[in-house]
Length: 199
Image (cartoon, rainbow, N blue to C red):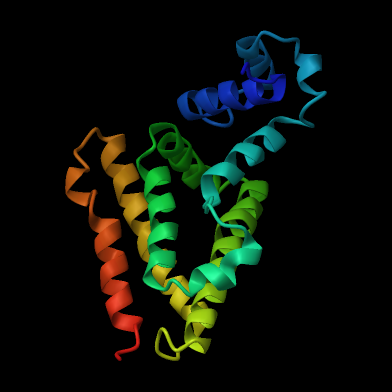
């Protein structure tokens, strides 16, 4: 199935942003890569920032294969719920195009207020809410020890974020990341052992 014009814009913009950076990528360059007039691009996006923010949402947001309404049911699976979240995170971490954009987003966070807002809304708030809800349900069902579900969410997510950051730095210098390929699974194991309720 051929890509829509909007999908082509996002695809070409992702490549340009990761190669040239945000400032050096213009709407004109994106339109030229897509093969459309600059004015036609504005039928799909208000400006370059909106294109960038749309791309950023996909990179920062963890796309779980469950609906938000199914979190109570999925959280009852305990460690399997955390493994599912971590697996999706790992797929994003080792994906080359996501990795390039993640590096660019880290740079832009310090100079672009809209990107900072998107980071908190799409990465921080949604993922912390999802995880803390899951931990709360696990506590209610005696699967894990009683604790602050929000703090558990921060603890679980911060290590995943650091591993992703470390892999991004290593790949930037073309260094091997193979020694980190199992770190996410080890993190889930270690974390689960520290919170599960002993029977």
